[in-house]
Length: 297
Ligand SMILES: [Zn+2]
Image (tube, rainbow, N blue to C red; front, side, top):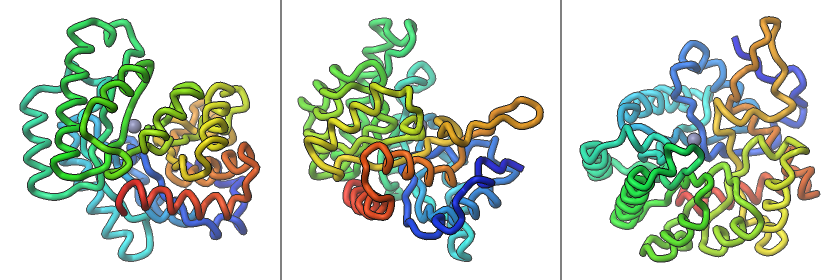
C-alpha cells in the first residue's frame, strides 16, 4: 500500500479545502492495485474533482474505464469525481498516426470530454528537435487546436523547451483561450513566458515542484505572473505519478521513492500558499473558481 505522506498530513486541516486536481495520470496501471484506497484518501484530503489526462490513443479506452470506476465510487462518496481530457502528447509524437487523430475526432463526436490534452510542443531531447519530428509535433498540435475550436473545448498544454514557438502558434491560431479556457500544465518557462501565456488567457498549472526551494526559476515565474495578473492566473495539479512534492518524497525501507498521488495536492496548495503569502483557505477558494472558469466545469 502506498501511504504517500499522509502520516504527516495535518488531518484537522485536510477537511477544510475543496480542491481540483487539474492534471493526473491516475489511470496508470501502477495505481490499479490500490486505486480505490488512494481515491478515498484523495477525497479525504479535499480533492473533489480530478482530471485524467490523455497522451496516447491506445490508453483512451482504459482512461474511460477508470473514470467510470471512479465515478461509481464518487457516487458513494469514496472518490473525487473523475473527468477526461483526451489528446496526443508531443513527447510521444513518433507513436502517433493520422488514424489516432481520426479516432480522437470520432470520440469527440460521440461524447464530450472535459478538455483536449495534453497537446503542445516538446524539444527536451535531441531526437525531438529533429526537423521532421518537430514538424510533426506542430502538425498534431495545430490539428488538435482545430478540434478544440470545432468542439468549443478548453485545452491542456504540455510545452517544454518550446515556449516561444508554442506562443507563436497559439497567437496565429483561432483558438481563443480567453473564451474556451486552457491550462499551461506543469508550467516550466520563465517569467516573461509565464506572463505571455496568462495574457493569452491560459492558467499556469502548478505542480509539487513548487514545494522545492531550489526550483527558483519556477517560483519566480509564478510570482511574476501573480504580481502582474493576480491569483486568477493559477490552477494546481499533481501530475501524478510524477512531480511528487518534496515533503512526500521519503523512500520506503527498500529505498524506493513512492509515486505521487492525488492526495498530495494538498501539499501543492500549502507550498503555493507559503510562496505567495496567501492564506490556504483564500487560495483554495480562488483556485476552485479559476479551475471552474477555465475548464467550463
Ligand atoms: Zn501529464
